[in-house]
Image 1 (tube, rainbow over the protein chains, first blue to last red):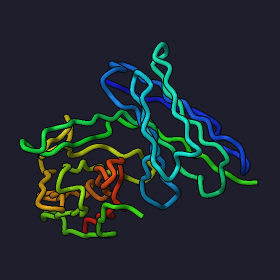
Image 2: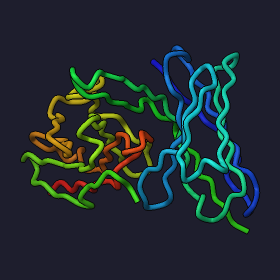
Image 3: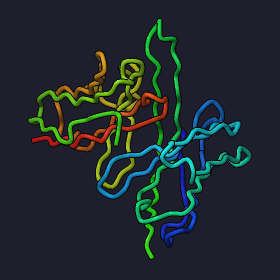
Image 4: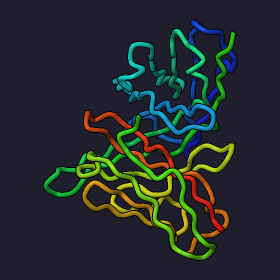
Amino acid sequence: QVQLQQWGAGLLKPSETLSLTCAVYGGSFSGYYWSWIRQPPGKGLEWIGEINHSGSTNYNPSLKSRVTISVDTSKNQFSLKLSSVTAADTAVYYCARGLIVVVPAAISRSYNWFDPWGQGTLVTVSS
Amino acid sequence: SSELTQDPAVSVALGQTVRITCQGDSLRSYYASWYQQKPGQAPVLVIYGKNNRPSGIPDRFSGSSSGNTASLTITGAQAEDEADYYCNSRDSSGNLVFGGGTKLTVL
């Protein structure tokens, strides 16, 4: 059973860089996309970006200029860096395993899913 | 703002059936996945693809899709189903996106 365990600094000052790491235990690292997702207090989920085992990344356009996601396949870990944080970046940050299934439109519809998720890390940005 | 639209809140009587919907143009081409989130916990995948349940998810949870609308149906809602539910798919540009979430209250 795959488990994700994440860690990183929980309190940052404005303009600092958020840094989180997620370790994957008990399953294959290849064949999936590994995502970061965040949730501001009392609000909904926001996808930040993803990376696969070969280092190919996709980012949310609204965060792309500040986000870097990297992977260390030797440790089965992937990491998130978000630069120039402000109070608006205060949120619980989750890592998650993702899969995208592409199906020819003539046959059916494509789909994706996130499972499992890490335990979440509350990151607070405050001066 | 999200390109997937959900009703903010829905209620259901204990044991009755409830449908939670998610609307978006991208859902004409993509199936939604659905997540249950209880207070203080990480989201849990409950439905993915056309209508697939991960291991351990009760069969009272089901999914369907028609046009630009995806639906999560709970048949015989239980008290433990009270939670926030989020849909997820892709937006018109192909980026992953979540709906705004629906708070389900079981009366």
